[in-house]
Picture 1 (cartoon, rainbow, N blue to C red):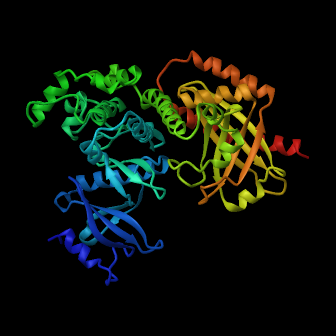
Picture 2 (cartoon, rainbow, N blue to C red):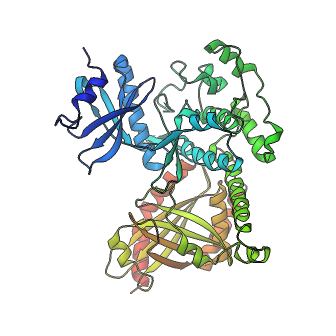
Picture 3 (cartoon, rainbow, N blue to C red):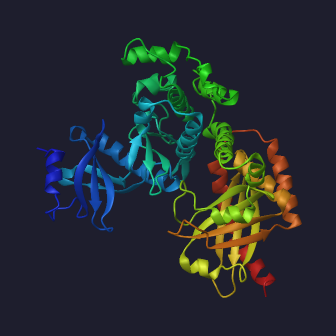
Length: 507
């Protein structure tokens, strides 16, 4: 006999030493789904941090469901490390009566379903939320390593209730994709077709309903339904009845309703959403990157419009023209570490618009002791560019911070030339022949600690130029992760050669 989870909560009460896994003190139930229940809890071994604990439903305690539950935890743990837009899983174990559980970050906020039912979403807010959903999905579709090979993750249940709008400490919103409970790993060594239908019929692609082989384009169809609903509060395809057979017919045969003209959407955005809803996977955007190419510049455009509207209330037309764009140094001084980036040792590129023009920069977080070492007056920075044309045009942009008598620090960063930001930064590096490295200290996101200016030699500029020209005519499958793996291997093999050349040049 299994104890009800409500009884388990009582046994892990405040006055009891009986903690879950000798660590977690359950407080109250905060959610319930098809596969289990979620509880708010205190992690007693990490300074009483609040966490969320998900238990597998006791009605599903067979070997198959245990395996699926464990797989969900592993997928979320791996993807959560790669993207801030996927809920982070921190622990997995067995509770009383061998009930499996896993521990997640605790999120304050509400799901997208609540927002959509409450009110229609402005285009600006739609773009802001959709870009973050896309970044999380793109991470999943890029995949995880299985037996040394990249295996894409297909979520299979993209819908408003699985998109969480979490509030940060600064009261900002960050989107988190939840519930990888029925996600499919496209492992080449296993069968590619679905074992059986799983999902929410209202949002499922025709091929998912038909239990056919799935690709990331299936999630893109579900994303299309979600985007349509965010803008209209309705789904683009309706079914006469709410059963599987009726939804199967609807997705196979019914033509999606057009987006209402009153929305006054940009034509590119409208066409992209309707393409996502194509019956044939081949007629949809083939990857999330294609969607981000539409969403990202539009979001920037709408943000600029919004900023101008606000500033027009404060300044005269003359003052507005003067103050519209700030000097570069002032922009950097006012910049905080982005909230959609984890506060850990990562490196990412950024393009900044300033009065002096557009400038590229590399943002990174370092430990306090490294920040003190790598000061502008005593640090040399060496850059190195490595290229991979196939299977995907990619640049590995390597920086090395060097200070005599201290261990050098590598700062590698990828530039995907099939993405807008990757291409823009690459061409900007060529036009400016310099960039900035901005160093933040871990857990101090409010202001950078060091700003380094780095120049690029004429020879390296020419190599960059040549590669970008070659990559512009490249056509093939989008496989960025494979090129990243190849570049990383090449980089590891030449690290010592680069260091030797630097030691010789600095003697």
